Length: 88
Image (tube, rainbow, N blue to C red; front, side, top):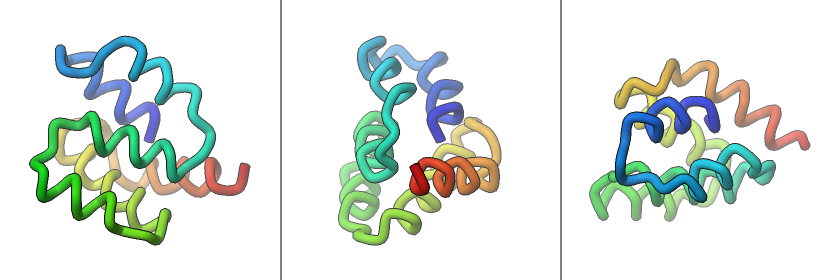
């Protein structure tokens, strides 16, 4: 997910360098999902829906779908990375 977000953030002027750095260093999957969701430029309703999803795996999968739709790569690769991050 960090890589997907990096691809999108690179082309966006709305994501600051400190946020990009923080995302690349986060190892807690729940925190990663929260930071990415808050910085994707989603509507308030979309962000709220993601942040209200208590199951971390579900939240990351939904977030991955948003990233894939924005051109940040395939959702499947993000799910694998979410599982790796979760095991850490």
